Image (cartoon, rainbow, N blue to C red; front, side, top):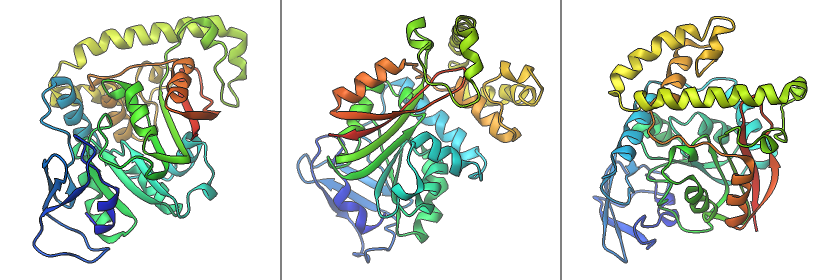
Length: 339
């Protein structure tokens, strides 16, 4: 943790200011604080700094599903391959922001995993706070020690430990649907964006009623689906129902066993046509393995229509600017501006 990070942080329990309660020596602005503790000036709660990461969880994790979500994503991202060259294009596509939007901006990566998108935002000239619930942040510790623009914070999206109106840009890609309350999590993130700041987020989509599905924005090259929209709607509904039934079993399996069972799915993901029976068609075997585990392991996995997500955005005092286009399976993403 760097001294530069402290003014951005707030107590996740009460929102109060934090101060160092245990620190051997006051470091320079850019030096890493390897260990110590932070204390809230209002409620006097203490939070440790371990492995250079302030651990700002609001309290003991008592919900079994939250604990398993934290554990399963820690396992996944600690094993996930390093950042890939295609992450750059995918990041710009999903955030719906061009390269010129990032230089000099203070950015929150809301649910960073092992930091694949944090790397892109940094390379575009942003100062990035990488925020996650799991131990996957350990993948970024060495890099943060050598980069004054990268900060690491462990915490919960439903109780984010930052002052309101802190960030210029927030992005949260494929994360909110893995919380107990995605609508509230979006509202919490929106509160951290300064006025006229931007928030980019996407969540898993559901086919929903046909009136919603048939008006979803399709990615270029997928226009042919319009001629078979009712069949596509039925196929996506069938896929979702089968997936949800399978997850009734897989979310109850020990993580090590489930990870082992994902190997056959990863092999199948390289077979033409049959690969669409799996949950990842990526080129790399290890990526397919991790992404199948990603789909089957987390206890929380909600799915939403674009109408639902638009309502979250407006409720949080934001204005939708653009919606993410997608393929057959809905992927509901918006770029919004804080009013």
